Image 1: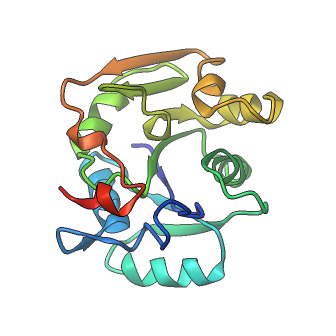
Image 2: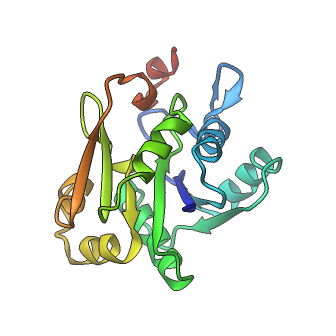
Length: 188
């Protein structure tokens, strides 16, 4: 079993409000993602948040789950790559070697996807339906953190993940991978 890391510290600029606590079919997105991770076999869940206020808010949302811990972003930049770097540094310091990533804005993700990724042994296992989903990758912490630290500032996360031994797993149905970036995306 690998732990999971939910990335929830983004600025939500296009949405205009906090995405993690938005309701989709009556359930907060972060709760839906956490349940999918648990259904997929992840026992410990780490949540990367931007500040103490967001941590308190999400602690309440996820209080019904055991073994959830929150990591504060240590940088000022609000991007998935910056939040991931910060969280992976904490994971590395705690001896976490492999972790399943999941952004908080993929409320339709399913546990079976994480199970399928776990069956592979490459340093990075990235799902793809219509397009690659780097924020839903199963990764080796040390290798990916090293790649992020040595990458150019403008390098995309996909480009960075491709620099370490990786495997792409194709999925037929794109529905579970849909993410919510704007109010219009929230319609199921």
